[in-house]
Length: 319
Image (cartoon, rainbow, N blue to C red; front, side):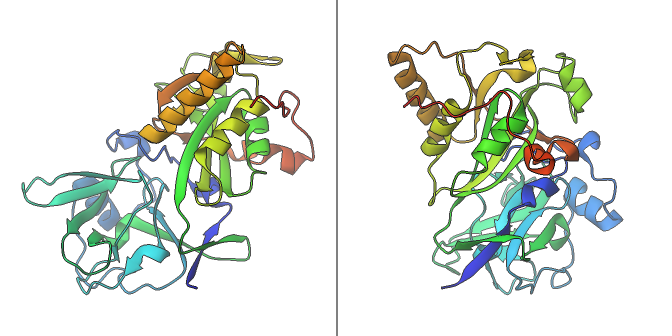
């Protein structure tokens, strides 16, 4: 069986990355300062590299492709194929990772990174080149390839990668406990839900950014369902506490689910309804996901790095 490999630590590489359903345009503050002139031209000015010139046109490595500007996960090598067009081609994208809009020429459909708005290329349908009948035609300079290595997790052809975002107090504990669930590829601590771009931990701790400490979970939905993850989320933190979790107090420690699909919203609402029928006074908010800003490196895998256990999170069966 054809297999691909996804790096467990990939999310730690998502510098400036955001939720896969973020709708904001690329801004100067999100620009990767290390981009070349050609990369800036293509990504920010909607330019196009010359056909057959790109690094990934005939690339056949196993791994994943992320946005060159912000690091958001976009495509897997499992969906890459040779279309003969001169640019890297994929017949599918990670759900919610790519935004489609009518091109300025009024004919083609432009594709952009759903997180940072960076230009990727165009999408075409009806060409019958693959069974999915879709071709994402992407500039190589808009992408960065992350290959397999010894720290990888194997995914097969039936794998379906999705993203979930939860906030339930200090992100150290939530990250630690969710990462143990089978089917979870990676969990990353970060900030979301506020109105300040690229906040620091100090900024968020001030309580003035509107951001919550949250975790972004990348998972294979064919191995673990979103409902299973959401149930676990409700059972590893106290969803009845307002703007706090144990000794941690402040709006950054609120309980909130940031859904990335309508189905996730429906599931979250269903679970909250079930908990309320059990007389839990749930205060968890359900909010459309927006830009997710990864936290500083020292926050990632905090308990694993320090050999400690969560001080304000513990499993309590509620379902």
